[in-house]
Image 1 (cartoon, rainbow, N blue to C red):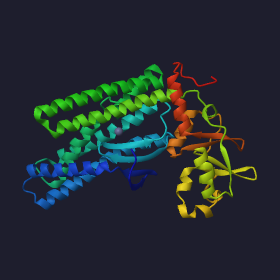
Image 2: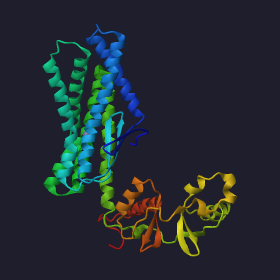
Image 3: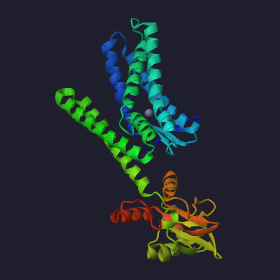
Amino acid sequence: MRSQIKLGKIFGIEVGLHYSWFLIALLIAFSLVAQFHATNPAWGEGVIAAVAVATAVLFFVCLLLHELAHSLVATANGLPVKEITLFALGGVSQIERNPSSAKLEFWMAFVGPLTSAVIGGLCLLGVHLIGTAALVPGVAMLEWLGYINVMLAVFNLIPGYPLDGGRVLRAIIWWKTGNAEGSTKSAARVGQMVAFLFIAFGIYRFFMGAGFGGLWIAFIGWFLLQAARESYLQAGLTHALEGVKVEDVMSRDCAMVEGWLNLQNFVEQELLRTGQRCFIVVEQGEVKGLVTPHEIRTVDRAKWPYTTLQEVMRPIEEVRSVAPGTTLASALQLMSRNDLNQLPVVSHGHLEGVLSRAQVVSYLQTRMEFNSGNGHGPGH
Ligand SMILES: [Zn+2]
């Protein structure tokens, strides 16, 4: 889930919207208009529309506070947060590393619903103090926000991994068993069961005449099912990569090309002929940079005969590289975090080889075909 519209930074954390957010924002605004029409018919059309939009905006501020709570606990404990994205089903904080302890996992997960519960409680307390007899827009707004935040806290505490409640459950299993990977699998299993319950209940509600509301519950169930399944596979993948190093998988026979070669000749003589995806650019025997089809595509085809590789390559100093002894899991993490397809493998300033996503995929396929079940790489 990536943000498509950037809103800016809070506490150094990027905040953005996914397109699907607009769908839910419109739905909430429309349903609020209908609700205020029914409960406060004395208000004018303009007032109702303004209060509905303001309430919807404040709801997203509450969602953002919930996500910020997760993110701030993460950053305070040294886990970098890439961004917070608001989308159709709420918010997600992209925390880049997994928590190192069960205790941290517990608090990182629990603080979100806690924040929503506190916001909801304060709103309802405010309504209580002012008194519901005063049917002013401000009170109606507070009351709605109060209930929705309490509901948000309760929903998020459902033990369906990767919901907050599922993470809390995982942290508890982890703490009890001391097994991080096993706890992810157990929590993901419970998450799948919860998701099936959601789907079944949603379909039941639909046939009992709840219409859209029933389908919505089933849809949330389906979404949870996908997420739980993915978490389960992810845990398995981490296990499969255990003990495997970059040097076990990387290719050592990288094609070398001269920096003075022009793009036209390079494409015809090297790229198309060899079918390789990654080339090392050398000058007088020294490694200067890296060229992939991506760099070639950025240059207009008409300019190919007049542009040299040296001009378009990514200089070796700017390329993220790894040591041969790096674990494959952390190299993969680096690739996905920076959207890289290749990583040069460098040891003591000397290029040892290149690791590409395709190699990792084919390595995993081979492992699956000849799965011995003991989860260790070649040479271990
Ligand atoms: Zn949360």
